[in-house]
Amino acid sequence: MVDIPAVPLTLEGSAVLHQMFRIRRTAWRALDADSKERILEAALLALTRLEHGAKEGHPNQTAFFSQVGHKGDLMVLHFRDTIEDLHRAELAIAQLELSDYLEPTHSYLSAVELGLYESSAKTYGALAEKGLVPYTPEWNAGTAEVIARQSAAMSPRLFPEIPSSQYLCFYPMDRKRGENKNWYEVSMAERQRMMHEHGMIGRRYADCVRQIISGSIGFDDWEWGVDLFADDANVFKKLIYEMRFDEVSAVYALFGSFYIGLRIPAAALQEILVGNLP
Image 1 (cartoon, rainbow, N blue to C red):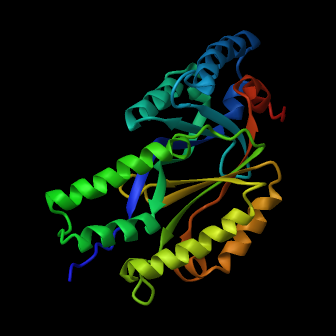
Image 2 (cartoon, helix red, strand yellow; image 1 turned 180 degrees about the vertical axis):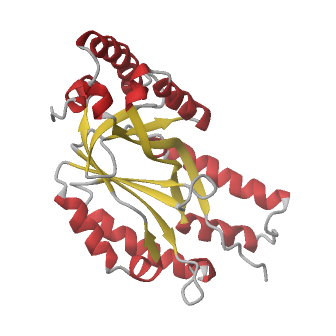
Image 3 (cartoon, helix red, strand yellow; image 1 turned 90 degrees about the horizontal axis):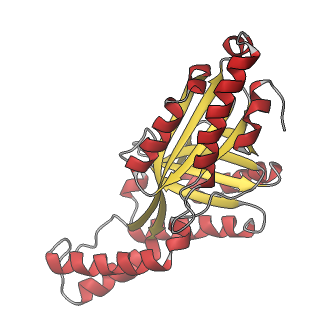
């Protein structure tokens, strides 16, 4: 009997960077009107260019959110094809004179991820039936073919546009690896079952919330990042509360800090700097 790998296949898409800033309002207020106008003019030119993204192919966008609460004032979300492209966007902001008045409070690096639990089980089983041994060249070629086919079919989900919804809820999360409950010691079949049941809850909210999951194992301090987009912020509370009763969350999930933002166009940054919501 062939030992089936415990690791499900995954598809990776857009590289994702969340940046959170606190506005140094005291320093900004101390500037004269001409200096503010000069700084804003240069910043809006650069930030609008980032916001519009690519005209062809993958969107490669940047979106801006007025952050609610003490954790920061401005949240910037970047979707790019590569980590190098993410870093270019990050540096484009850092090079602005405006960055002297933005204090970083947090950041999070990840990549849009689709887990293939059901496809993995079917693929591993089919390869094992052919007598192939895991991680041999023949086995790897079989899994690579599945990944290539699924990636092409899922391209719109792997390289999505940033939804235009009014609200964003972002949070990181882990699966437990403790002595009593360890997600990574659960069988593939059991994990597949729990993830299927977990996903069914999300589907019930599909008409009012858009969810984008990004993987961050090896990239940042948590294992996944979750972005929820909606026009009614109460939907975040209802969805996440209901999921807490689901087995995969109730037993195996750990959650990091939550960040809530209201979508603003780059052109409205001037209003945020003076404490107004456009």
